[in-house]
Image 1 (spheres, helix red, strand yellow):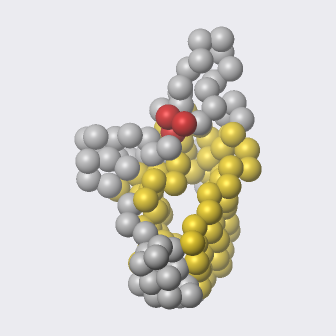
Image 2: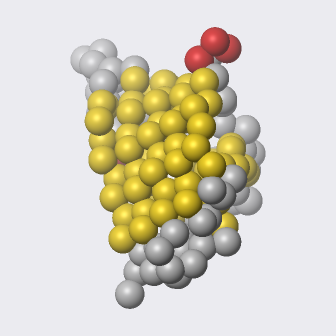
Image 3: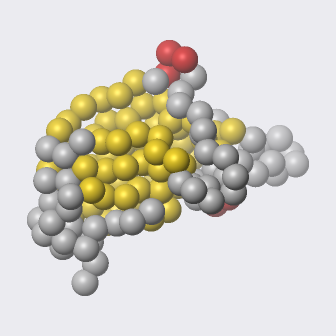
Length: 135
């Protein structure tokens, strides 16, 4: 078995990306699972087909029941972008300063991964993320 997860792209526009994620755990959990693959996003409409190289996290809406979630920047050694605590709901808005930039170093891919923390069967998360694409 595996956790029941969904990733729904709400908007993949020229500059903005909005994705909604859910997980209902069977106790397995997630470990550094890629949730945003920047190479698969819509290209910039500049006629050259410029590929997205990364994102900035501008807003996060979330609700967790029973487990927390680490949101990671993918790199040789992953770097924590945010950690969402268990049994909590909140809205995080980083748009006033342009969003949280990718602070990872060596082996940086631009991708975002999730790792669940303290998961057990029946735990859930719902996370919506708004991001600004970088080219």
